[in-house]
Image 1 (tube, chains in turn green, cyan):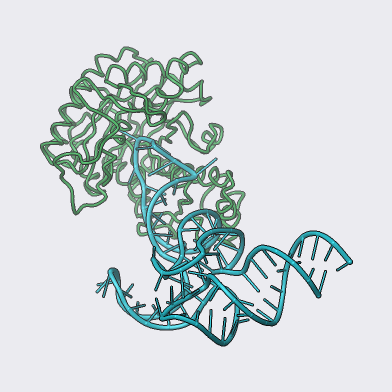
Image 2 (image 1 turned 90 degrees about the horizontal axis):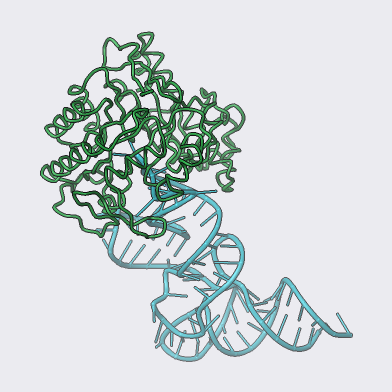
Length: 394
RNA sequence: GCUGAGGUGGCGGAGUAGUCAAUCGCACCUGGCUGUAGACCAGGCGCCCGCAAGGGCUACGGGAGUGCAAAUCUCUCCCUCAGCA
C-alpha cells in the first residue's frame, strides 16, 4: 500500500490545514512533528516513551545507518521500524544533508541559516571538506573511521528501500547560505538532476518518495524548484538553506504557492516554537527537527507562556543557578512524565551531576512539548481557533 | 621531642630566580545549538579602570633578608603529614 495524504480541514484565514497520512505502519495525523532518531534512536528516549509522548513517526538517517550498522543488516533483522522496535511509521532522510555538512558545512557560518550575515556570498570553499561532489554523486570520508564511501541518488534510494521506511527522501545537493545566485542555481540544477535519478531508482511503491525543494534564499530559484518538484513527485519536502527566519517563511510562501494543494508538504529540519506556528500557518503538514533532543541534552528545556516568549525563545537553561532550589516542574502547563514527577531543582542536580536521567527527562519534556503543541495546533485548525491559539503564544 | 616531606588561586595540582596574576584538571559563571561527526562547543574565572588595546593594585603560610629582579635563594616563626621515640 502506498502512503496516502488526505486533507481533513483547511483553516479559513491562513494556509494551515489538518490532515492524515496513511502508511503501511499506521496513520499520521497532521500537522505532525517528527522526532529525529538519526541512528535509529531518538537520543536518550525509548520508543515506549516516545509513543506515550504522542509521537506518531520517527525519522532516521540513511548516511548514518549505511555507515553503521549497514542497511543489509537492518533489512535482515526486519527493517527499520522492527529493528528499532518502533511500532509505527518511519521516515528516512537521504543522507544528502549529512554529506553536505561534512563538506561545505565545515566552513562554518551556518548550514541551514546564515550565522554571520555580514559576510555572505563566497566564491569558493576555503577549508578542506570531507567530501567531493561530482555529477555522479558524492565521495566522502566516514566521520567514524575515515574510510571512503560513495553516495549517489541510486545508492541512497537503494539504501532507503532496504531500510524500509514509509516516507523516504530524494538524494539532493545542498547550497550553502553563503552562496551567491549563480552558485545556488548551479547547486539547484544538480539537485534536480539527482532527484530525477532518485525517482527512476525508486521501485518500492509502499514508500512515498519526497522530492526536495532548494534554491537558497532566492525567490526565482525557489519558485522554479517548487514547480519542478511538484511536477515530478507526489510529496513535497522543503529543504536547503535560508538567510534567516523571515527568509525561511517567505521561502515557504513562494513554495506553497507553486505546488499542488493535495500533496503533503514536509519542512525539513525546522522546529523552534515560533517556527512551528509560522510554518504550519503557511501550509506545512509535517516537520522534523533535532532541536528538542539536542538542546535537551545540553540543558535547555521549553517553557510555555507567559514565562516562555519570543524573546527567550520559549526556552531556558536548567543549569542556571536560579533553579538549584526551584521546586516547580520544568513547565507548569506540561503533562509529560518529567513535569508530572520531578522538580527543576532535582533535574538541575541530575544535570550538574551528569546523571543520565537528566538527558532523558529534558529530552522527553522537549519532545513532548513540541508534540503536544503541534497536536493543539491541529485541534485548533479543526475547530477554527488557530489564530486565537497563535495569538496566545506569539 | 627527633628525623624527613610539605605549605601556590574555591579545590586538586604545576612552576623552583626574570618570558608568572601564575600550565593543567575540577568546580563555578556566561553564551551558543533548527533534514544530529554534538550527554556538546565557545568564552570567562585575584581586585579596580576600559568597548578594546591596555593600565593600575594586591598576591604563591606569617615576618625579616639577599639581589637590578623572588612563588622560586637565606634566616626565623606558625601549621600539616609520615616515620622514630
